[in-house]
Length: 118
Length: 114
Image (cartoon, rainbow over all chains, first blue to last red; front, side):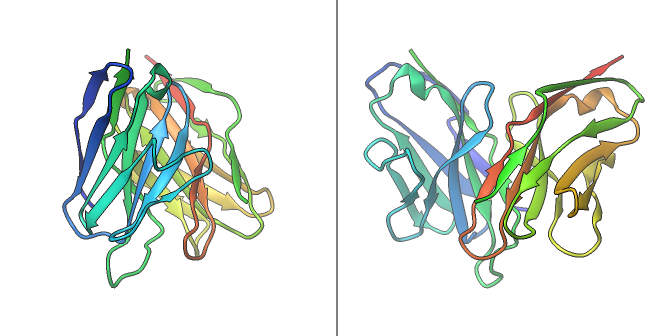
């Protein structure tokens, strides 16, 4: 399975500011995803990060609030913009598949970034 | 669209007792099924998965799950609970085919009493 790291692991931010979260994978992967886990809740998919093109957002999430980049097959960033206390969550990066092998149907997750907005 | 139901939010067992965490799914076609575990302050770890073939699948840490199509269930079991099993457990479903999304249940917290 891929080894996934995220930076920062946690942060406390003031409302109105923005935070960029980095996700680095130790091997090339086909699919990269960003999830949000609000306190005591399950995981909600924010978007699929597409390499070389705009991310695909799920209903309720927009690019202006959660801009995503994916410059290559091993790296992606998620920015949480103009933050409010409601954005306090764990943000998780997830990956699936390898180039040339198609999807393996298994998704692996990073350790998460714990964001608190005050 | 698919969905996952995990009844209850918390299960408590004694150390050495059987662990049973229930998961039912709704899907128009037989999906792929997964169990993930989340230890405190960590990300999700894949415990086991069912895609095709044998309906009883074994995973890490002594866990196993059985896919029952007739019951649309994929319950997670472990014969003997260990203190280190205390965590949050998520059942997830994914339809076959390209661009399908992983859909999670709301999760169950497992506590293990000494």
